[in-house]
Length: 318
Image 1 (cartoon, rainbow, N blue to C red):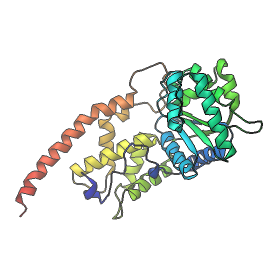
Image 2: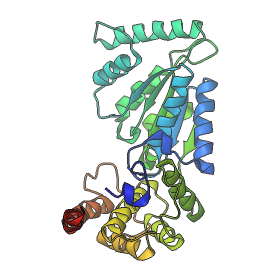
Image 3: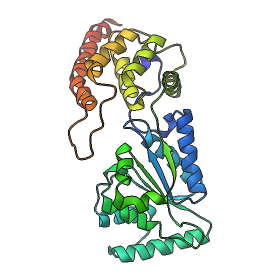
């Protein structure tokens, strides 16, 4: 809709974790280097944590791209709310390991033999679990036991656990101390600084095809950073809807006032910057998500109105 108006080939601020759009800040480079080094040197357990929306899944997708280039076998579990049997079924299927039995003992025997075969062939295997803060202590213990699949010198299976800071709190529980002791490397994602937010926005615009001047004014980027507080996912949402609003108003570049308007539509100005984290058991919608959902109807209505207003112009053209 707004792509032609701003000279873009695609939407630059989709919230999908597209690894093409990974912006390598210093902390992101350190996290990616930690993950690749841990896999390359068979460190066993690697932990990746970070606040909601700071790019963990995008980082994991870039890691998966690298692993596939290296011909490393991978299993990516992105829905951790599974029973132990379901988890093992999913992992075996994603690794491509045939196993007729659904008994855990038989699956472990088959997995161990498959890992030994790969090890003898000089190949590696990596299990990646996203949203690991939602794993039960029982499931985390089952994953820990997978690191017992080893030779006398090296681990046969590399495991990456990725999750929100609640995962860190969970691993501090006494019953999970054996798992915590086996974590050899720990990577973290962090919010963007103002300078990184500028680079992040410009990088995404360039990848999406922008080449004809400034899309966001410098003051607009400062407002984006102030309301998004350096969280890439919120930055994407603000920028996406600011582009829509600017298109509706036929205004370019996107101004600070447009970003302010979008932020107020989403009531981001009413959200405390240091709100205390909710415990994992709380199932209520976060204030930001609720605000965004409430604002969607307003934006859709504005878009529809803008398209209706443009119709007479199209009809007048020869």
